[in-house]
Image 1 (cartoon, rainbow, N blue to C red):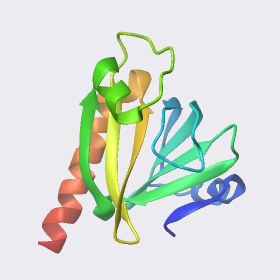
Image 2 (image 1 turned 60 degrees about the horizontal axis):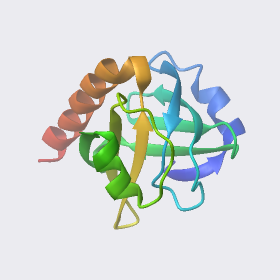
Image 3 (image 1 turned 180 degrees about the horizontal axis):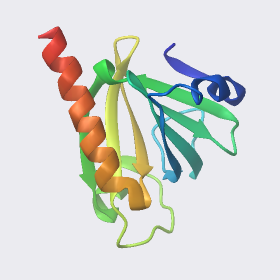
Image 4 (image 1 turned 90 degrees about the vertical axis):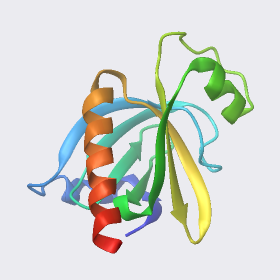
Length: 135
């Protein structure tokens, strides 16, 4: 299933053997219906990444095959993308995940915090697997 849905649906997928719970992270933009920063719990599944938004009580699932790019940004680069000022820590690395949904380019900006290196390695590996399988 692709797109946004209510949070309660992620509980059954957490039982899957192939699911990795990255724990809490920071969401900093990209989704029109969730304009403000908030806490997000992140799950890495075999075929998708799942974001469970705490304040807005919704989820976003992005299949790895739909991810078009993953890039890290500094605070200055992030401010240009976001177009809205938030008091952000200087030494944080923000990760912009671009993906396609219904033939439209979209993105989500996440602070993976202490899970940054693991998350990037995992996501790069999975997106390459799906790109190789389809190419």
